[in-house]
Length: 128
Length: 231
Image (cartoon, rainbow over all chains, first blue to last red; front, side, top):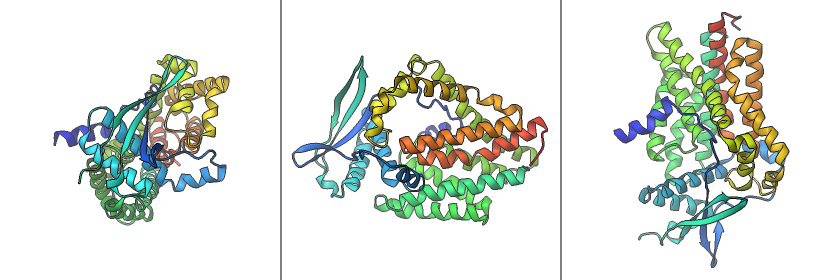
């Protein structure tokens, strides 16, 4: 009940502190073919027509944003349930079984003038 | 815009936003398809005006269920705003007495105003935003740019500085738009373009549709408070 209240109060009394600063940004990478690859790689270019279409239909991108939310929760220490949830989403994005998913979280941030990547978490194989 | 007409516009726009979001979940991971189907139907019902009061109450329940299922919002601020609009509209539908109903709708309008103003004030207080560095970092390494080509904009220092200040000034001064209907309509037009740009550049399509659903509330409140012409 307390947990539910903690989720509803920010809905009723939002803080609205959008983009106050740019925090370290998570990337979810999956072990595939002997290398780590991005779960949801970006295209090189998105045309204006595609942008217009995505106003109405953008399920893959929105789920990719949710995977980054899960990555942030894991980084904050909320591990068990969010790892299972993230593994399911990664399996869906990659079109593979959950049992085949091994992923890691890379946080990208600025240090002075350099953009730095730090691996902060690596999953084991899916539990049987 | 009378209270009833503004309510109806908000219901239609919210119904569309919910329909659009829920349809996206129909292709998502397994069990969610079943769970989002009733939400999609409620969105359709809200657009068509079929028992809107009942639809709103059901959508409140489904919104809370979504928070529990995803252990928080699925799509950040847009999910929270959608649920806030749903709750305010449900209260404005069911509370006894005109004053209480108007208060619920006015609360939504107030939160819409704060969503811009607070966001602008916290940016103005941040040195990184004032220098343009924050927006450059959004393009350089945040998860939001929808293509790798867009990341090159991180190097467009002057343009990003100008864009940062335009966003900060617009957001921080948004409450001043309440002085007249004309200024408010103009501000909401700019806000819609701002959300559209975020949808195109950062893929935040759900924010665009969700925030539009709150616009009728602030248009109604402005006329109600200033005693201006009610559309």
